[in-house]
Image 1 (cartoon, rainbow, N blue to C red):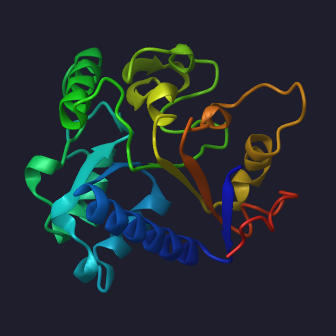
Image 2 (spheres, rainbow, N blue to C red):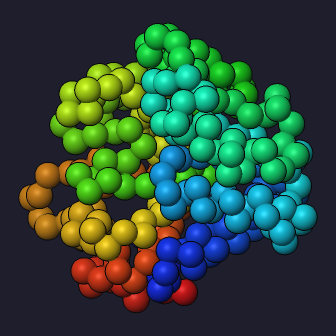
Length: 248
């Protein structure tokens, strides 16, 4: 059962998510000696990253134990305005002391399929296992129910063996590189951040689907042995009957 954290404003969502991430990271570094996190793009995660890089979070965090990855990327160079890596670098990485060797970006500037293949090797090398299990994967959701770069009706949703795929997203007229559902569902913890009231309808479809309704990509996120947390504004959650569940 997913746990909902419903707060009044986007700023409060970002603050609550930051405390959640730091607590999880501290526990992981203390028990395992490292904390593996896959970042997402978007406005709400950016604010989360800015908070993580600011005091008091930055001062209490064992950054040298963090290992940074990305759940999806646009096929652009790392300095491009659309790059998820660039956003995270500006909001978080430039302000903290994570060793550069522990920052693993997707190579959006090379051929998409080659970038996906290379990132799969990076993941297996970093985790020393065929199927990595992240301590935390951060995700968002689009108004069409997509998450990471897994869009409705695409073949990427049917992938069962690959960890990372690249494919042409027709309605965006662009390639995307993305984690697959099997990799996401191997995570120990997944956290969604949703702050826009415009996503209230699709959020209800994902969290309270009607019997027989089609499965949206975000609905497929069901970690086998992990937990799922949803950090939501009250506006985004206003159509949920289960809004009171786990409410902060």
